Structures are given as C-alpha cells and as structure tokens.
Length: 238
Image 1 (tube, one colour):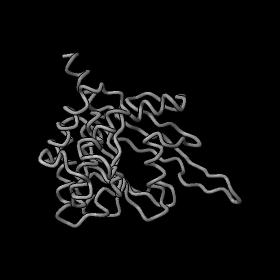
Image 2 (cartoon, one colour; image 1 turned 180 degrees about the vertical axis):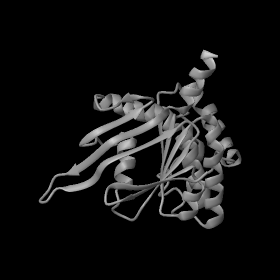
Image 3 (tube, rainbow, N blue to C red; image 1 turned 60 degrees about the horizontal axis):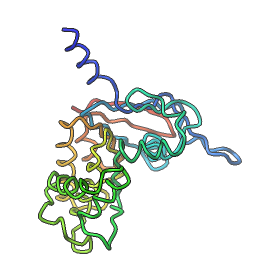
Image 4 (tube, rainbow, N blue to C red; image 1 turned 135 degrees about the vertical axis):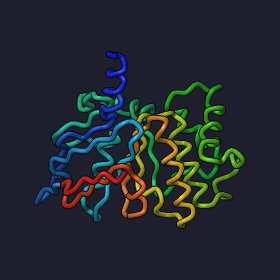
C-alpha cells in the first residue's frame, strides 16, 4: 500500500516547475519580461503557453529549458532547484534531460535525417555504437523510418518537423519543450505533429508548448495564458 502511494505521489509531482520566476532585462527603464510566474508540468502532461507577442512566453520557455537564468524565483527539474548549477552542468542537463523543438526545424542540410537525430545523441553522450540504433528508433516513433537516409532538402515541412521531434526524443528526455512547432506547417502536417506529441505522453515525458494557435492549445491538457509577463489564467483543457 505504501509503495502504491509512493508511486502515485511520484506521478503527481511536477517534472518541471517554475516557482515565482521573474526576469528583468537591464536598461533605462529595465524591462520586466516576467513577473513572479509559476507554472508546472507533470509526467505525461502537455502544457500550452499562450498569449500575445511580448507576453513573456518565449522568455519563460528559455528559463524552463535552462537556456537563461531567472532574476528571481526557481526553476526545478525533477524537484531539484537548478539555480545552483554551473554552466557546464546546465549544458549536461539540457543535453540529456530536455528536448527542444523549434518552429524553424534547425536541421543540418548536409546530413541525412538519421544523422541529424544522431547529432542530438552525440551531445547527450550516447556511445557511438548505440547512436544509429537510437536514431532509427526515434524516426520510427514519428513515422519516418522510410526517410532515415533522406537529405533534409528532399523532405516536406511536416517531415522536417518530425525529424526535429525525433532528434528531441532520441535522448529520451524527461521534458520536451516546443516553440511554435506547427508555425511553418499546413493544417494537415500540423495535425500529424500534434498527434505525435500526444502519442509521447504515455512515455511519461512532460510537454510544454509555446503557441499562438488555438488549435494547438486545444490539444494540450493545460492552457496557461500570459499577458505582460504575468499568468492571467490557467485552464484545464482535458
């Protein structure tokens, strides 16, 4: 009974959490990009960050991904405050525990789809003999095993984004952060990407997506609305 309760508590605890984070950029006057924002994502949960341009969404995503540090507050990964980590430790945590998907794909044109996925595994420290197998496994998960040796120049926009997702999940991260992942896609390709993101939830990954698209936000479990650097509304979608 105690073991079952402990397992349930582990599932309920946030994998990724921002606690009263603020971000101030110096200047005359200083820019308050975030003001005491708190947000969390649990294992298997998809959180959408929505709001107008300048609301603080991308700033918050950068803090959650350990690409920047808050002026105040805490960013916690698996319950541990990341504030005391040095730059090399933050880089190691990102490489092995956090996956990123961007609107512009960021694929290397001179490498195949599989090689692009392997690049992420290289930075995560995966041994050479394992990288190709893991890359092919990740491409299969996004339905692109048949395009493993294709050049990005021959891929459609939707296929490029699926390769980018494969690269992000190849390291088996605890957290997957997406910045407008459907922004450059037609509606059919966007639906495929959303279906793939949804299929990742049973693996226990915590998903956080920045989006302007109401359709994308509706596919999340939780919608967090920001305005002027503050959380103005949190809505349980499903």
